[in-house]
Image (cartoon, rainbow, N blue to C red; front, top):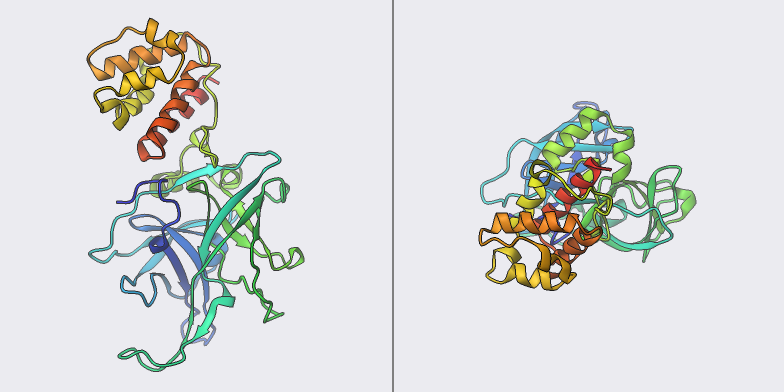
Length: 355
């Protein structure tokens, strides 16, 4: 399995979405891009598969040693959010499983963030110069495109999209067609998290700009059924647990009451107890040495890890701001990991519950 959110974009999980035209009518199909967000599901843009009447296949690592493909069906299609989820009919033996990526929002602030994305745009059409032994005569193929650039966060606020500025735009060799055709559906990555899905190239913005539907807007416009299925099958968290692309949780914990019952703290305590840091012999002492000494001085220490964590969390609640300080120390000492993401999700849910 991959480590969720730690590695960011994984080229082996980038998908070509191949939509066939109607049988017997001679009409061409269309292509899009996507990303495998679980063992049997691929995230893409809704308009890539909207109105699909022919075959639907998803392909990975084309013409590489690990190439594989599978038939697919549309599991989620939400045109308001321009997001779709495809379910693969089967996964060949030997293909590794895939954990969901981390999803994140971007801050509504005067910042410019780096991003990367990978897909299969039209300007990457190529023609083989010579036949490959055993593969027949030369033919046309579409190669991958790994783009990087910046997101100007305050652009496109009314449309609810991210403005992606690419570093090196391609030449416009077909004025009647966008060179970015086929890039739709590509996952947009920032800080090791998916922050959007490429949706459209506006000609008026020039060749060096793309628009992507931002993840946080899905919660505003997608149907409840679509959000539920995206959560269950693609790992999309509840809105209140959606972190930010800079790695900070969605909400601080400073406003929590000074006393909370164990049932309210159990998710956070469970997540903290699972940290490798705290399972090491001196991990808790190292963590407490990294924050204000008031917590170590006033916490009822216990040799049982779970009870020790519970006592430390309860003590932090009595000193406003120190629970946030504790979680920041966890992030710095532990580094990016699925366990830290679990802690952040539990903290965000706790903050939202008592907001």
